Image (cartoon, rainbow, N blue to C red; front, side):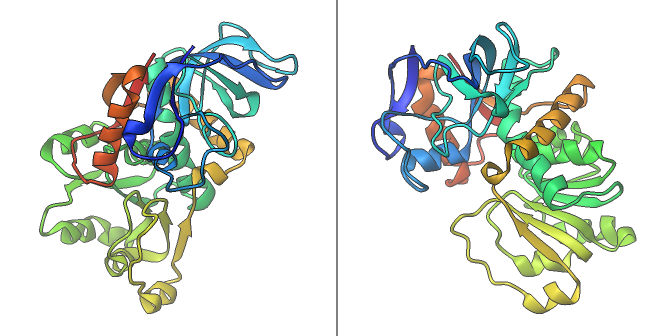
Amino acid sequence: MKAAVIQKTGGPEVIQYIDVECPAPAPTEVLVKVGAVAVNPIDTYIRAGMVAKPPEFPYTIGCDMAGTVEQCGDQVVGFQKGDRVWCSNQGMMGRQGTFAEFVSVDQKWLYETPVNQSDEAAAASALVGITAHLGLFLHAGLQTSDVVFVNGGTGGVGSSVVQLAKAAGAYVIATVGSEEKKKQCKKLNADLVLNYHDENLDEQIQEFTNKFGGIHVWYETLAPGNLDRTVSLMQKRGRIILMAGRSARPEFPVGPFYVNDLRMIGFAMFNASPEEQRVCADAINALSEAGKWKAQIGKTFSLSEAAEAHRLQEENTSGGAGTLSGKIILVP
């Protein structure tokens, strides 16, 4: 089979699209014929050697995948050949990645794909949807009628936050970088969509949140910068969620933070247990089945173009190019 692999860490140019041996499923694993995969920032960090090195080379890159069951191990329960499935959390913790024509996935990380969802949409929703759900519910304890603020309302995680929070009955404020993205975010039913380039951005946020006493949940999808600003916009006992900005070192307003009983929570989705992630996956599937979930796909490549896809992801993640709205998808 063909797969996008690396023999060493480095830039996108180290990715090779080559023939490798098709994996055989272990007793609790499911062999899946891949229909689509998605690119995530963590994929580029692993490839570049910015995080723990792959367990062995050649290493197949990628975390997310959707496809069709080809074969099941003899201890697999609940899946059979022909089932459509999706997964995330591959490509780390000793697991090979998903950028291949076939992937063997342990059943504990595998979920059924809703009938009304394409492989491309399922792959695009995987890591970002689970991340958004973990932050909002497991970590922030989102309640009905909470006010949620999220940076980057049309990005992978940001758009997922908007949809999950609205489905839970929250009020959502989202920021975007252009008028076109503002229209896109409004289609996701955010209550207030603002351009983060506006000079009076904070005044607009305060005007909306005055009747609530501030923001209940600040979901930061970017590297945290001005925490004085963030803390000043929060309601007492508000929760600030951090899941980006590995090298960020912002100043911290200790006094305003603790006198307002605020909480700041950092998390990485790959630390969540299979049981915790399944709760998220079930919720995303339920929204999709109800027609209340829309995957945000920015650009689609062939799997053989994995290096180009990684290059585009890095240009937007660390380079701030702003040329991408939604997830990068690759199809075999």
